[in-house]
Amino acid sequence: MFYWLLLALAIVFEIVGTLAMKWASLNGHAAGYFFMLAMIALSYITLCFAVKKIALGVAYAIWEGVGVLCITLFSVMLFDEALPLMKVAGLATLVTGIALVKSGTISRKEASHAAA
Image 1 (cartoon, helix red, strand yellow):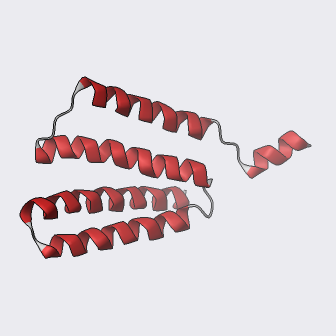
Image 2: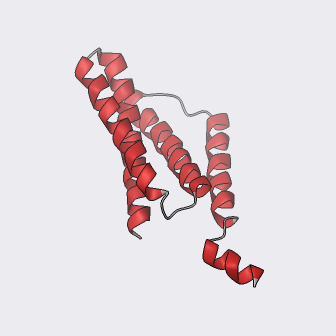
Image 3: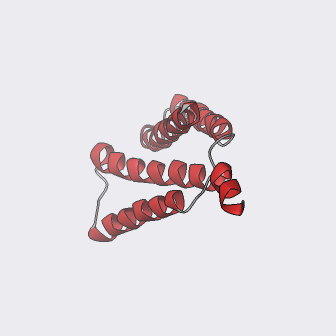
């Protein structure tokens, strides 16, 4: 459970860092870029710890997919970006892909039982 919490933190850091990048680019504040760098660094650091116990493919798919989904939704709310039907379809496909990757991954314990 601890490693899933680390993955959730990595996702939050990624979302905050990416949104800070957009905010800094719109407002021209150098502090926003430093904040962005700190958040992205924290995101990768916590992701590194999370993959100690979570399969890399699963962790990365969830980290990137949930990040893209949330960043897109927050961009619509905070920066008035458009959300056309094609983008909604892409996000739905993304969520489906994450679910398939997660459901198609077996743990080492399950693999050893299957081999026996």
